Image 1: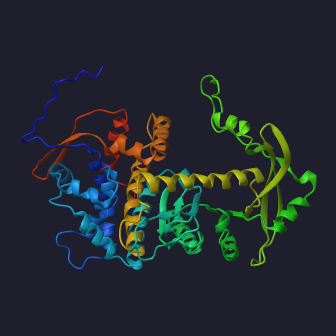
Image 2: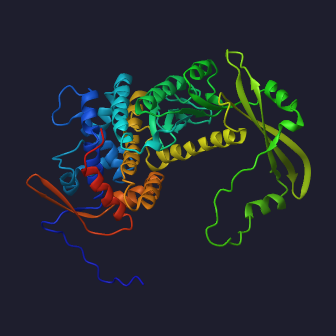
Image 3: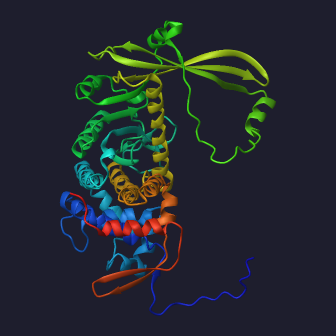
Length: 480
């Protein structure tokens, strides 16, 4: 089928084209929602703006990742691409060395100013959403280890995973998978350190946006004992995991048999056509054949009881899941085991099973962290110390935020509202690489004449129908 035999190359005289024509729409969006102005207004890192402003540096790092770059050094390819510069209306862009120097100029206060600038624009994007969007804001928090092989990175430490690096904290809005705050820390710091302060900031942001209910979620490290009374008094709903401490296990063991209810989970997916024949479970067969210890889940039960932590003045609700496990070796069943998982909340209305399901949905943040780390490559440490790498993480994560905003601005009204709503949700949930391939890697001819920049699309893909609808929406007036 591959029949090309005589393939020749020629250099075009006047025609210029780029492979990331969709980046023009992203840049239009950044200007339209006020991101460029907000960064220049809030962030004061440079003393003299010759020739670059703060927004030039921040967007340069984000656009590098959207254009397929993996590291700062990839900016060198873009700055020597005249078609790329013409597409963004730029005479030049910062080189990798200058971009790294810009990161090193940041102080913690500058990073907070950058957070504030991005979040002020985030509010503007949220205002474009339908009323149902503001029913509930679910805010997740977790830490992630960022390994580095560098020898001279100030602030790195030896982490609990046995690697050197940093341990940033990430708070995100589960509704849209947007990272709200990223806080870099040394590798040996605990996951929950500083989380309460940023939970409060995220709650203030959600209130300003107009969310009617705010929910905090986190694993056992984020139960934040000393802050639960405050959040309870503020009407903030929280669901945190709790360690299986001996006193909690004793309470669970002493519950009446009638207190337990079978926990039935919904199937992971629904077969839309006909069930397929299941593939052989190769891993399972090897475990049995080699007589490895195998723990099999037989059933789950859920119950609840009241509990007041020693550092709290309020009595909260503990929801406990009991997993009935079978410990096997080969084809022999050795014994049964029970394991308990505890969740603390002040939500006294929602059914216990729904509390468990809501808490388990926090695991979706692991997918966001994996995307920020492996696909976007925002959670990396390319510069020389903790603060400069913190600044890089925030600027690089803007690439993912721009992806989320692009999806959120898609219209979902009109005669085809149902289909458009589904397309919006699909775009919002896309992995970063799939989004870039669908909406950014669009070959386009660059025509720059006078004050106009025209990107003439040279190839077709199935997502362009959605892409051009987004382009039209970005060009229309925003709701104040």
